[in-house]
Image (cartoon, rainbow, N blue to C red; front, top):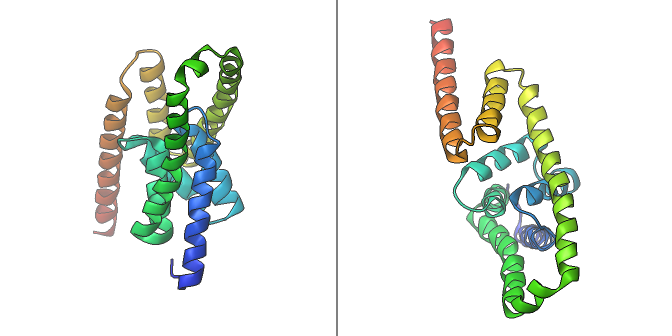
Length: 195
């Protein structure tokens, strides 16, 4: 994305401010911020489309490290290369560092305060709803491909995780292997069709 110096500075500031605000207002884990990022960067700013946001989500989740940081790196890099990635990561990491530092200082008070305890319980319900929304949209995206393989992998992965307790890492690696095999078979099929 080519921009002049002034508009680049403005976009970098907007990227920092957006990731900072999203990170500061996100409680409950990585999938919550993914939903908020989609609303901000796809629907409001229109910097990326929904399919690209779903790709970012899949990469961020399957890569080592926190989902918000991974998603910020990809999004920032997509917008302005390495500088954009650094700006997005800074915006995403500052709020938790500040908040956790304050909580650490007042830990005993937070732990014993019944109002904070109730607030956290209520936030869990909201977080569950947001995560369900992300899962629903990811499921719709898989079904929209109309590929039996993808739908079967999704169902088998759910059963393996939820009912059989298979590690998420095993499922991710299995999905990578299946995806690469599917890609190579498609390439081979195209070559045979042309030949």
